[in-house]
Structures are given as C-alpha cells and as structure tokens.
Image (cartoon, rainbow, N blue to C red; front, side, top):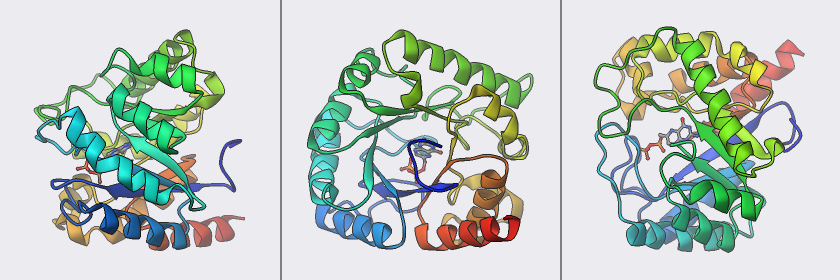
Length: 267
Ligand code: HH2
C-alpha cells in the first residue's frame, strides 16, 4: 500500500481512558500514556492510535472537553517520535485539535456518521481517514446483531461510506476501510468476516483490521481479555494473509514478530 511501509503496518493502541475493555485505567495519566506510546514505537508500531473514549459494548459516551483533556497532551508528548499518529475519535472538535497538535490520521468508528462536521474537517485538513463498519452504536450494538450476509452487508456499507467521503471532498487515496471486528457482530459474524476478508479487497482501498484481545477470541476458548495474546496473533496473521494492510493491536512486539515470520515463510 502506498501510504505505509512494507507488506503490513502495525498500528499500536494507546487508550487514554478509565474504561477500555482490556487496558482501561492503565494509561489515563498522560505521562503513563506517552511512556506506553514510546514503548510501542520501540516495539515497531508505525502508527499510534490515540483514543480518549472507549467504544466497548455498553460504554458511556465521554464529553468533548474531557476527551480533549485526555488526548491532546498525549499527542503532544508523542508527536516527535518516529510513528505517525492517529486519533481514534468520532468528534470533529477532538479530531481538529488532534490534527493541529500533530496527528495525521482520523480513525472514526462511526465512518463520518457521528458528527456532521467530521467529513468537511478531514477534507479540509487533508487527513487520512479510517472508515469503520459498526451496526448501531456502542451502547446497544451487541443486542442481537443480524445480517443477510455479513460480508456482503459490511462491504456494501463500506462502499457507500467511501462514496460519501469522496463526495464530501476527501481524496479517495486517503481513505482506509475497516470491517469493525466486534462492533455489532456475533462471534460467528466476526469469524466469517476474517475468513472472507479477501472479498473486501475489491473495494480497492487499504484494509485496517482490529482483532486485538476482542471477545470473539474469548468466545472460542473462554479466555479473559488479558489472556488473549495467542488469539490476537492467530487472527492478525490470518487477517494479514487474507489481505489486511494495517493491524490495530495492543501487543505490538509480539504481533509484529508473528507477522514478520509469517511473511518470511510465505515469501
Ligand atoms: N477497535 C476498538 C477501538 N477502535 N478502531 C478501528 N478502526 N478498528 C477497530 O477494530 C477498533 C477501533 C476497540 O478496541 P480498544 O480501543 O482496545 O477498546 P476500547 O474501545 O474499549 O477503548
């Protein structure tokens, strides 16, 4: 892919939240979050995804001022590192402040549907934008999600959101797409999306995939969120072989090594 190096790109997660599902509260202090971000850069993250609001199922929304207070000092502390910075937000004001501070990528889990100002902001600033599929919203998304054909439905949604982004003035070359593992999907839906990920390549844009520590892994083997490294590695490697370009993970060193070895074996 043009905008990233090598066959795959690792996006490390920096959650500046009290309530993220796997690392909530660990990096709420800006200094701890910056130190963690630096460790992820050392471990080989080409991108750091900084977020100040949890999107876990049932999460309560965070106000704009609080989200800004959480993420801006962390971006300030990380902007001189060798990684590109992505802001994980669906609020235009937070994205605007992050872009001004040094972020280059806007990772919007609502795919520009959450804030009417977001598309114009990203177009105006020339940001790279990640558009993710989600059925419903975080508070209710796991209440009995249904699809005709999960892969076809997600693909049609992403095609429509890509079109909307381009219509709003965002260059097509700057759009990355993400099937939204765990966002309004059962375990079976997530696994089918990963198995058939290659079908999303027809959309012609880089694919971002985030399986890291997610509950579909625990549904397979009963593991809690802090013991899903093996499942994260397996699903990230399989996603990469099916065509994922960017792997969004918490455990950067381990996933990078797995991807590097898998790529070497496959040639
Ligand atoms: N997953 C999470 C958050 N943001 N963004 C994209 N593009 N793709 C994902 O799969 C994705 C995402 C959820 O993970 P995490 O940030 O660890 O949890 P929380 O939302 O509870 O902070």
